[in-house]
Length: 162
Image 1 (cartoon, rainbow, N blue to C red):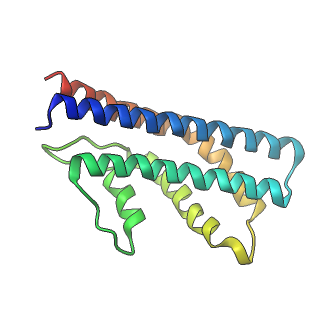
Image 2 (cartoon, rainbow, N blue to C red; image 1 turned 30 degrees about the vertical axis):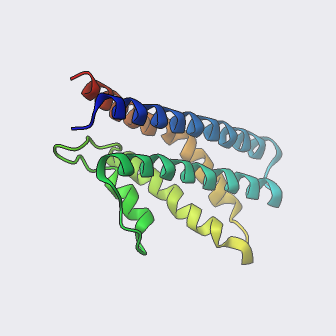
Image 3 (cartoon, one colour; image 1 turned 120 degrees about the horizontal axis):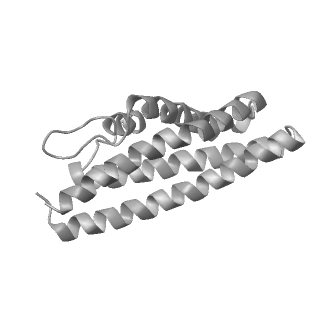
């Protein structure tokens, strides 16, 4: 069992990362509003794509924090990104509760897939409608994802009191 001090440090780092995710969501909301008002244009679509990319990177940083603290590591192989995300759905008996529900997993997996496309879109650009759709879907999924994250955090916090 982890010491109370280690859990407090973990929770502080966890909370900080969640705060960064909140800020990323604010940028995504702004890009969606701009697209809704102005319409699409390459620069605005690319900007929205950039913030979606950053959002998923922020979630991965949170998941790496969880894995690093509770499980030590995830093997860095060709399927690292999906394996890391799948690991968050698992409740690992005697170690930690799940971080995400299946519903949140599916929503984040959609953003993960987009991040891959974004990183490799240098030769063909981004699909305006796909970006708009993903912005909308990402904003709608925020409550579910953050509810899951809060539930995990509350469970971990209760562990430190035992």
